[in-house]
Image (cartoon, rainbow, N blue to C red; front, side, top):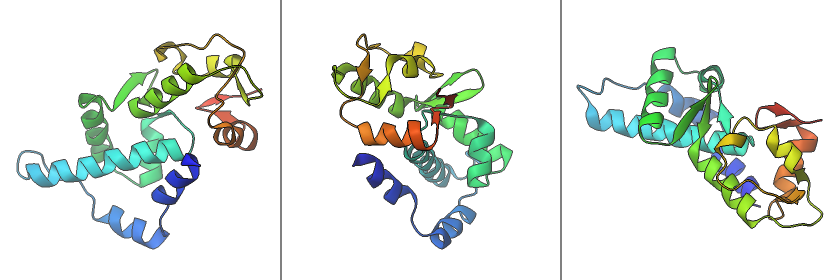
Length: 165
């Protein structure tokens, strides 16, 4: 499954992650533009993959800084870069990952009736519901990745930052 591939990519052994993260302090854009772009690009990709692997379309600034042990200055720099490059949108103090939103839009477009795990009522609880291009009209959706959303809904009992009943 696509979800499991992302987890394998995002969660390499912990020692190498800690080593890489210690070396990723973001330098000043004015003096070291190449290094700045490289490190901000690295962190942007890590944040996108992390949010997808934990089945979350949106993250708060606090979640990003605590998860990756980033100081506030670096965290704000990464978020600003992602907003400027349209990798994120802001909604109610949460940062919505644009790539993940596009994936959800694609899934909604391809949705059809069937024995699925995620309903329209579940989707309407999402913080990003109003951002969806094609809101599904049928009652059962997400036929391509039922296991992915099964883990999200039933194991974690959390749906993209919103509680599922």
